[in-house]
Length: 362
Image (cartoon, rainbow, N blue to C red; front, top):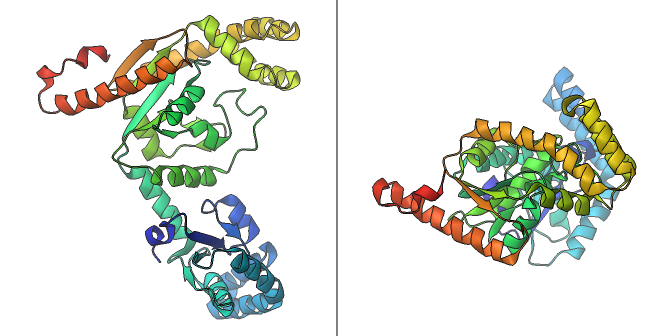
């Protein structure tokens, strides 16, 4: 099957990735199960033989390893087949769609379950992922200074029926020096891209998709060049929230986390923020004044955002002042603004002078 066929009918597919554990850990199709035909050592040995002695010797050695692992593979694939819906479609991938995936497909068929192999393997899937990021997506960006409650507002928009991508949720990181505290380990850069592409493909391309304004790097993961350019060129709505409200939001969000980790993260920005400012923030943290500590740190983050915003020069940028960033009325207003922006954008392409909403966007 081609990559597009292989990924279709998400609810009825069962994907088995037969690559070695290290390959799978680096990146895999979301939802895939790893049943390695060769372990990491065997895969490395076969690869070395391929380079030194050619395909024939490597293939024979690989088949010998498969024979050794056959009892274990039988048990694993039988467990998968027995637990699967009889009508589910078993789909198998390796790196290039060669010996490993075809061997597992043959084994599955011995238990009476048909199997399809991904043409070109995981390598072809990765090309498919990169193609997803080059497609034109109808994005609306929710922007704002640190602590404005953008991520929580995205969740409210999702509850209201909007299509939403939570980039920080996919990255397991909040996008700052404090971003990884209390969160699971970040996925690999490759797996982050796979998860993002998978989320995008589940949406209706004809409808808008909300996401948060992000830099290209979120912790250690990187948003693909083509997609970050779409984010930067998309119309944005800026939540203008007073600093005192934002400081309290941060105190509520981070207050339950480890004080030692908060201190360590504060020290990470000492060089850029200034030693005296950091010391003052740490003293407030030690006294338990989390809102005061957050307020001092926001001076640094607000300046950083201002520089980044000046560089972006977005085509449409609407500012929405609010002191209640998580109010239900705000969610409705955001949707209304996005609806007007979409109408205005479409109309200005034909008759710019007739768009009455244009002055709202700066």
